[in-house]
Length: 197
Image (cartoon, helix red, strand yellow):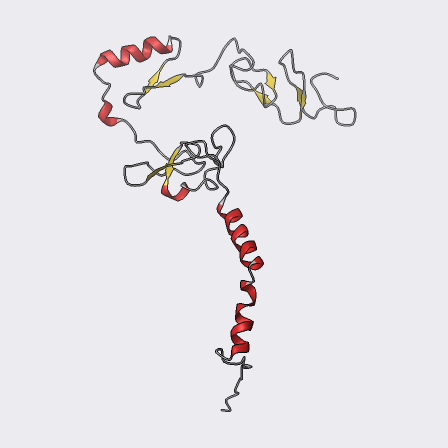
């Protein structure tokens, strides 16, 4: 077998050219720099240490002060950001507003629509303010812990406890006792009428 394939289909697919992988891939990627075939995991220039990276291998750093993208291809990232800060092009007023960190939610977080979760401390939009909506991790993995460290039961557990206490106290028979006293009207069966046209 030359480049890949199986015994039944010798021309189907190729082996990954990365020396530690050599996985048979039926949909290989061909690098436009070194013209070798790679699997999905090793297809990028960095993953297979390409000796001739193409023009698409540009590197960009984002300035934290103004959210500008600075090209750092072939140079030190820290030095490029420092040069950008001294150049006078860095304007903090152009900084992009923060957005809700929930996946697929791009709602900008402003003063009026930001909510900070009491259990995990993450700032989210009002739509995702409840722990179940933003997959709350909680402090130390305990979503039931409050800021003071006191554990509380969830609202559903409180409801079930109140319902159980009510049923034990005999409150479930209150309607039947009222009916025996005669204060409630007797139950009536609903009637239906058919209109003839």
